[in-house]
Image (cartoon, rainbow, N blue to C red):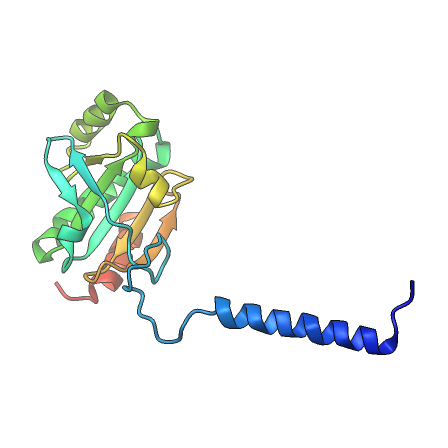
Length: 185
């Protein structure tokens, strides 16, 4: 079956019209700020909100921390890079906490044992909140596929950087926190 030259042209015009229609209706409007309710664990988007209970029984909701820079580190007690970077995170917390830095070390409890997580917190003398992600909701919402994964969230709740894997050094953390808070302490 042969298609005439006019038929080929008509088919091309139809495909072009369908493509342009698809582009028109699927395009994002220009100028939308990242805080329009779209949440994604990616740089430039609002950090997905969550509420978890810490190892001490306190409730922590990310949206309640708006106005402060937040470092969210998702970890497990069996994770060797997590063990290696946790002292650096504690040191950075001690240094920048007086200026408002919040550290939430979210234990991926769905992949860990709560007793081992508690022992880890005690062994490493961690003084920042350690929320337990017992049902995996934060691990899933933040699309975590490697531990540790760290999110640097600005005062407006926008993810400014994501670091997958580790361990991060104290110097690396300091540079990222300085960038997050704009060098103001």
